[in-house]
Image 1: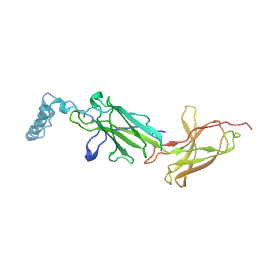
Image 2: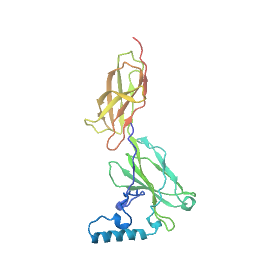
Image 3: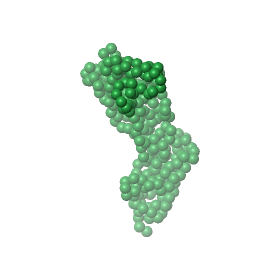
Length: 265
């Protein structure tokens, strides 16, 4: 039920890119030489284009090469609201990057949005680093090592860490008579905005290991929480759970699974 994780090259203050840009692929031109790659739009434009290409070729290769990315490992990529994750790694320079200043940026939902500096740190003796984060909403996270007198500016890509609402589940019984009604109830935290799409859905695990919808009910406001209560006839043993859909600020939330054992009449 988790959302697909995307990797987005973030931008920092002023629109500066925080992650290594991808090189664009250029289709090979017909013929040979710079002139063959320049569209035939007039001799003046062709001359200007050729001059720009020649100037780019004259720049040293080291200046054209993108800055190396900072590899980042996340302890989790999806967690419950209120939980904490860590983002850590080792700078490309290793011991040469010992004591280097680091910055952690967050691009919080709703997307797209601007990246904001949320925390700073310093790398360890071998260039290692770790940030401990307690996210509020789902967001993309990126680590930046600002330029120093000896090292170029380096950055990671932006990685999504999903935040899920907590969903509790209670049942009147877990050993019902086959075909009898069972009531499921619980709370959702943080609260879900009340509306047509604010629903809690009871699901049962199917033979393929996924879950199949059984019944849905509208959520109700309950102060800082949302609540649900549904009553349905249970005819099969199995694992049941309750899910709430993703919203602008949170990913899909699900309760733990509860096992129902049918009793014969």
